[in-house]
Length: 291
Image (tube, rainbow, N blue to C red):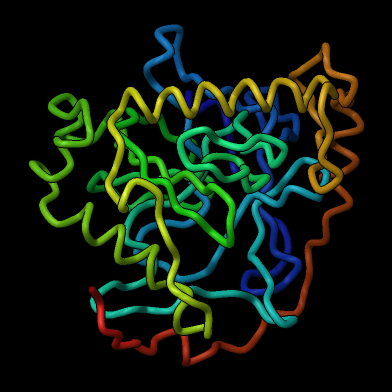
């Protein structure tokens, strides 16, 4: 499945014009959000994950919802490229971080378990395997569990998963296996999400369920629910003005575009851009009273 999708970079790295587009096996530009299937095989037990941020890196890269074909780009804050701070002892992102395609945390839905609405994004994934992935990789993962981050009053699910090709993947089936094979990672993940915005002057993030990770079955139910919300979105049964729904593969969608139209969108993306000078603050360590 991974070989069916190719990431193509456009624009100068470390600039606001930098984008990572995706193409299918035929070389047609596609949307990583809408055109890469959620399920990697017919068993519905292996999922595709789009890697936005490789482990140990700091640039806050994400699938951009508003632009056609939804390329990956770097988030911008106060007119500057955004980087997450190093909150000791964590360096950058501590897992391969990305999203599950064809999922949508519908902001019109109040989750019955958290009491909060969705955050209008695809489901976030923390891939915990040993390999450091590359930005734009499409990898196949097993779901192990999930945390429920409450971000400014919205439910922001963080799914734990592992690359099916990881040496220990066959021995891992549920959330309790994370502590067995990666001791300390669950606690470190809660710390990371709780404090990563504090150096920017924001309050600590909160969690549902007393910051306890829910099991694989619970997580898969959440993914199934958000996949159903995405299906309603792509069929225009519900709308989000913040999300471009242009799609190549979903031919029954009112948002479908031709391969020629997709190629035109891709070709118009800039090859240039003005790289920002390296910011030494990216390497700074922030020492907080972690609890």
